[in-house]
Length: 291
Image (cartoon, rainbow, N blue to C red; front, side):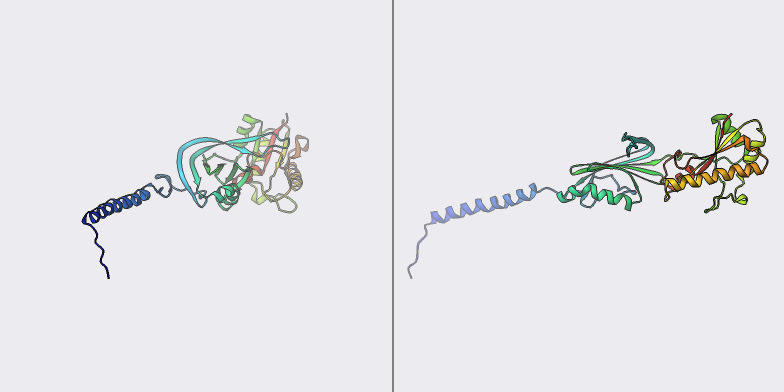
């Protein structure tokens, strides 16, 4: 076999080229690893909202909070199509999120429409694909969706002190201030709406007030806004209740000529009707001065 002779100078050149190329390849690999973007994560200092979890594949990019802030919540338009809104005030929390996956971005609005009821919120208004308003007992939420971002504003309402009238002096104070008084605590039977007297001690206080003001004429107004009934049913319930109260007062010495009864159904709620406390507040008898 014939041996080939490699000149020493050529060996030296090959060695020098190898010394140059190997570090360059390593440097290129290290540079590519350095340039690779780091995985996106939640911004530090922004804890998850306890009222509404974030969507999967989304990260928190900003947050804010306040002890007492007012937020305007869009509501469903009225019967004439006029825009409606409600300003709520209380402890405020804000989160802004980025949705990382493209397919989830397209479904964000629909997913949030499902997530809010799962988290206990009633949807009060929605406008696809951007806006959702919801509420649950003691809290309101406003969600805005825009492309691959969405934000959530949650307001925990300041307690609205509600102290129902419990005696005749309380009725007098309301009459002097407003010429009407909301009466709570009258119990009616579920079917006939007859008064359950032993469970309606406030009636004795109403009677005391009327006996102390024999020269005035009053209207007994009945209000009800049931969560599962119809407006027609509520109208009939309030008709029976208004008549039952007027009849009871007449039976206890109040001249019927000084009393009128009026059924108002669900036409004049005092507040929203989504939570148990709101339903109780709307269900009432009102005594109004006519002259």
